[in-house]
Length: 177
Image 1 (cartoon, one colour):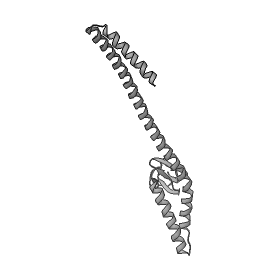
Image 2 (cartoon, helix red, strand yellow):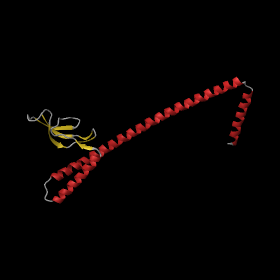
Image 3 (tube, one colour):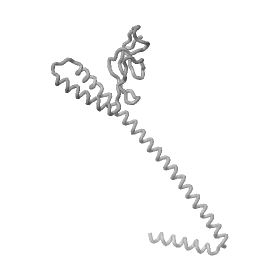
Image 4 (cartoon, one colour):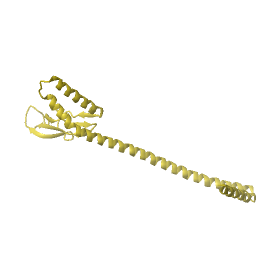
């Protein structure tokens, strides 16, 4: 460390000694050239810094987007696995029973599951009296009936669900005409 300091001092001393032989105009010209060289280097470093900052900003945006996509995918997968359980709770609730406390308990659990799904942004796809849309519905039966409109959904066999605009499970429906 001490040796480096001495070398720098020697270089500075040599430069001062060399500059003593220059006229004022030559000295100013040399300083101007040095200043221009240092300014050019500073500009290069600044451009490099700006590029690195832009790349880092793009990286952060990309990582955030990937995290959101991953969260959405994982949430959809988990919800898709829970939906058959929700279907079975609905069947159990709609079954006649003599034990009202059992039925009330089942309804409470069903409502808790629905609350959790609601917090995750899960919505039921509305079907009855709507027009068939293959993006949201899966037609498993067709019926000809003049009292219904063209491609009108008349019965739902299995509820469909979505998170935002992403369909987790299509509704299984009967379509008229």
